[in-house]
Length: 289
Image (cartoon, rainbow, N blue to C red):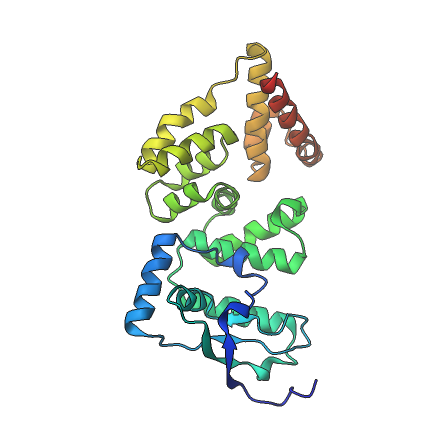
């Protein structure tokens, strides 16, 4: 490539043309507009203490001018009207393998930020998705278990709680934010994230209007437990059991699954995973009628 032996060097770049790292959104979602504005103000007042690092053309297949370190700093500078900036081009990584570059990206950003456990879990999920080349929703049951074990080991928690973290991460941002801010506990956040979408939207709406998250969850969670009345109580109870079984499958909770559907056979778990989405889709069609 001709740049393999070169050292990193400072060069000027148009900040608006820099590209986010491929895993940035999955591992480190943007903060709230208020927090982004506060950070931009801090940069405007105090200046930048750390340089922005970008990649040159490289053998890892990551586009040139991709940000390695400094996504928030780039956004803050642009918000402050700064479009041109000297950045550090990492020519020393031109021939580095992709996994080394990914580790540098994840390690630096994790070390620089004061991440909560749910954010650390998000990083682990993002790296695992990149490793498997597919989103968590498309992982096999074996890989889901492996991911839970990885989260449990890294964050020093039980595999069951790691499954709850996955449920929260798959849920709406408002629930995740409330859990991150210690406004609701693990059990309440898991419960809220697994409620029917209409109930979750009602919770999000109340939070947006200023309702305390724990109050919004308590207010609407009972509604999520009530079986729909459109087609009689027998169908409603069945749909409710399927929803609860779906959560048990997601958490790989064999004991709960057996209690709901009367079997702890692994094949039954896999069959349920294949059929539940169709059953829930059927439920939505019933409600629409």
